[in-house]
Amino acid sequence: MALDSKPAKRVNALLAIENAATRKMVASLLRDSQYTIGDEALDVGHARLLLERVGADLYTVIICDKLGEAGHLDVLRYVRRETDRLPRSTPLICVADAWTAEELAQTRDFGASDILTLPLTHHTLYRAIGKSVTKQSSFISVATYCGPDRRMAVIKNYKGPFRREADKHLPRREPSRATPAPGLAPAQGGASGAVKPPARPESEIEWNRAIATGDMRIDVEHRKMIDYLKILGDASGEEDGTVATSAVLDGLRDFVVQHIEYEESLMETFDYDDKAMHKRQHAQFVARLESIGKDSASLEEQRRGLFLDVFEWIVKHITNVDRVMIAKMRGEYGATFLADICDLQTEVVINSAYDLALRITHASRIANDMAAGPSKRAHLDGIANTTERLMNLMELADVRVQINGCTDSQLRRLGEIRSALFAGAESLVESAANRLIDYSQDILSGRYGIPLGIGDTLLRQMGQLDSLAGVIGGPEAMGERSRKAVESAEGLARQVLGCLEGGAVCLEEFA
Ligand SMILES: [Fe+2]
Ligand SMILES: [Fe+2]
Image 1 (cartoon, rainbow, N blue to C red):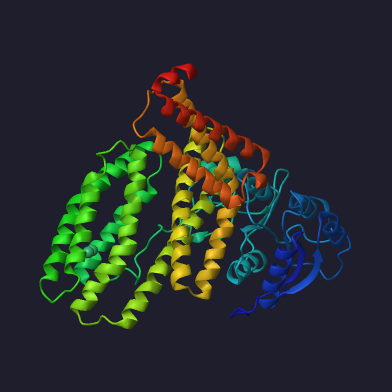
Image 2: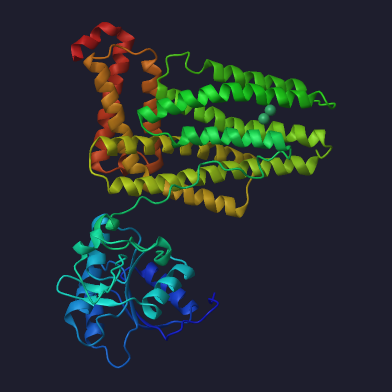
């Protein structure tokens, strides 16, 4: 695919990219954009050799990946500081599939023209090259920094390079004057070099045609249910979860009663053959909402249970029952409508699973950069909970696909979700095992007595651990640390279960 406009300046690129797939992909994007590839290097030594021998046919841009671990810094140092065979201001764009905060800061301080994160699109690469090659801002070469000027402060009567410390007290340019390209690292200077958490992916269920009934009031009210679901899904941490659960429960109970009253008033306006079934489902949902908080479940378990109930209600009741009722009321119900519902439900489940997988991938990347401590632990717990929801959805998706089939693109998407799940499963196993260890040890210490329903909770946590381990391929496929954590967690949990069978008295032995 060629881009609409050709580059204003002829571009002859040196690709110094170790990863063959990335090199091939970047080369393809460049050729599609009508750029020339001067040379390709596979490692730092090869890249330096090409740069040392470069002649009249200068590279107008260099694109490199990390070339091992930090080979891009060697290339940057050579181009910016050591060679005179090509201009020091030669644009140098660094690409990688992930950057830590430290890597970003180093790459920036070594004078990279741009820092991109894979995957790239034509537009991203084209814009980065265009910005570096044809619209390059002034170049700074001082003892402490050699690279493009990325400062955003405005100095009246500015006459040359100045120390960045002085920027702190200066007015900043309007953001619109320096909008970074997608995937571009933050501008240099101060805290802006830190990795910013990626924008939170869309909530796991969004309004779409699978949920729309066509009745304006009902649709508005169903959207409100999705908002409640988002509040529950976005809550993380004990305090957040508690506030969210009680707020949603309070709001949802009243709201659902009013909503149901309206739907049931519509049922009386036409000859509706599913009236009894529909009313029964309404009553069951109301009863379920009323029952939450009246058993021994912890607040976190209540939040997760409520989330799954509301989610299931949206997927099953709204798409399957409410939509049918409105279609019947309008005389639009028939075989085509039924087939459509089935496809749409599968679509909702798969898209929701995909959004969850995205959320887990983003959260896992953030976790990699977090220092060990309570925040990281809470973050990992959040990932484990989201993974559990993803696994539930994948089971549901599998059943639907086996019974009703699915499209090729849905099948592809399921494959992508499984890959993401597999990639992050080992750290999730470890996190789930540690959670079970802590929980079991607390019980065995006797500090908190024996919570009601502890046996069910432990069995559920063991089941989750088992499912996660199954995603990886069992204990044999795990690293030593994860395997030991799982063995320890299962051993402790079995001790607790053994004690429960034998009576609470024996718990004192472990105190
Ligand atoms: Fe409804
Ligand atoms: Fe309904």
